[in-house]
Length: 168
Image (cartoon, rainbow, N blue to C red; front, side, top):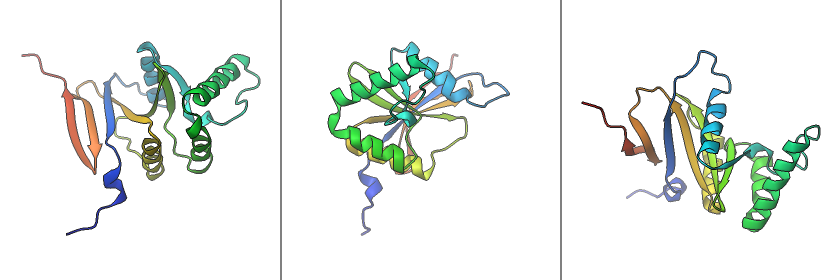
């Protein structure tokens, strides 16, 4: 009999595979493409790394207003977790790329490109966020030929939920 590990109690992490034609210059492509996709699907999107900053861009009043709105929404819908989110952002440095909101629900999204994988810090932060009750997804930009669309990872096992069917 073996001892159970802490990771076995962590929820499954949902991976969403987004097929796109990938350009030669890949710098920032995944974040740009996935942010546009999330906004198109009705999500309000903010950079999660700016949680807890008083005024991230004082020279841009519209951006400052948007992040003040995020702070007010976090204060309204999850006041118990606001201080913990500030702590996670300041100490662990592994918050997902985006925090999104739709229908009064928050979602953290980590963007990855093709073969990129999660770092140890990111895995640790995802586990912390799930323990706080937040939904966390990893959206991965993949080649158009990839058939997997949605999968879950749990204890290093891939469980495919949705796959594109081939046309015969």
